[in-house]
Amino acid sequence: DLGDLTLGLGKVWDGGGGNDDWNTAANWNDDIVPNEEDDVYIPVTATVRFAAYTTINSLRSDGRLSVASGQLTLIQDGILRNNLTLQYGDLRAGDAITVTGAFSWTSGTLGGPGRVVVEGNLDLDGESHLLDGAMLVNRGAATWRAGNLYLTDGAIFENAAGATLEVSANANLWHYYNIGATPRLRNLGMLTKTAASRLEVLVPFENGGAVSVLSLIHI
Image (cartoon, rainbow, N blue to C red):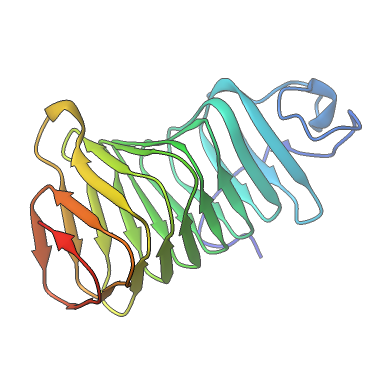
C-alpha cells in the first residue's frame, strides 16, 4: 500500500552504507544520494538522519526521519507515516507534506510555500521554532511545551476542527521582525492554555472554535 501518492519510487533507502546518514550514497538502492528528480521512499525498518542541503521531488516514508541540520526541500508532496523529528534543520514544503505519525519539533524551520498537515501527535518543545511562509495544520492532538514560535511571510498556524492544542509553554507567538505578509493563528478546534505559564500572541488570532484559558494569555 503506497498511500495517496503516485510515485515512481526510483530512490529507495536500503541502508547499504551501514549507518543512518541520508548523505551516504551507499544507503540508497542505486548508490547515489537523492536529488531534485527523485521520488524517495524510506521503508518501515529504516531510521534516517538528514544533515545536508538537498532538494527532492517527493517523499514517502514509513520509517523514522530526523532532520537534524541543513535544508530538505520537497518540490511536490510528501507522506510520512512514522515518526518525524525536526531539530535544528529546515524542512520546506513546495506543495503539501502530510504527517500521519508523530511529529516532534524541537527547533529549526518549517518553510513554505506549501503546507504541513499533522494528523498524528504534534509536539513543540525545546528551543525556538520558525514557521516561514508555510501553513502548519494540526488535525490531531498537539502539545506546545516549550520554545517560542515565530511566523513570517504570511504563515498560518491552524488548529483544525476536531483537533486539540494544549499550551503549557511560557512562550511567545510573534511575527518575526515583521518579515513579509502578516501571519495568523487560527483556531477551529479546542485550544487550552494550561495553568502556571504565560503565552503572548502578537499576530492576528482567528477563533472559530473553543478556547479554555487557565492562565494568562496576552493577545
